[in-house]
Image: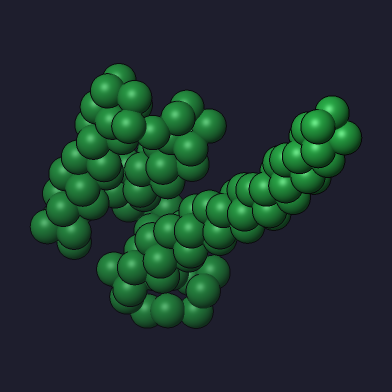
Length: 117
């Protein structure tokens, strides 16, 4: 279990450094980095508090705390991915609406240009 704690600690700290570096270089926006930093922080807490791993294993009905951690990690990342899927869907809808508005404006400008000639 100590090896699992060490791997989780290194992974979560590495994820935090990667996200903060990407944020500093402006590769990602602040609102997107919050989800990743929250997930990394949750992993860090889970790696430092063995009682939390054992409680989670008991709560999930799993004998092995390592497997409970794996289930928690997968769940946290699925939540982050789902959140980003919602954001991408909203952006796609906004992009379609914007494209339609630009097409209407182009049609209006073309019709005004034809009236002037």
